[in-house]
Image (tube, rainbow, N blue to C red):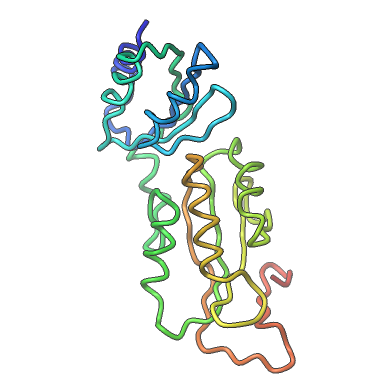
Length: 212
């Protein structure tokens, strides 16, 4: 069965209120995987060998891209990995949260801060435990801590000086998650402005009796 036909079957079985889905496509011939990567590039898929995984929002149309694969005789197996519905996502939203992509969420949250912000304690809540190991690796430059939930990673950012990753590094790490279709929600748990470090590496926050 062609990939576009497989998508029609999957799309026809989705709930009416779906907002985003995770798809994977396994290319039948390994030698065709590089070509498939170029065609699938608009969805910035993650890749392991000849298997690709990517996120699709409701306002996107994967059928057009899959049709190109069919036209170039790239065969494969398309599978639905996960589904997020509007009803399921709505209770989880807070004013400081946004949906994908994570780098875009970072830009929106930083844009809402005062110009003199100096320190941020941030949290990424990944959409699946399948993302946790790879996500932690891609976030390693910001020294993430697995804390607060099964899929939550927290880290500090220091804009001027002191303990925490530089803002440009934090954003780049989030871009790396986007590039591998690792999805989730970003929020700023604590923010300080214009801190002055006197014989310290920066402010210390205590969460549930633990210094962070």
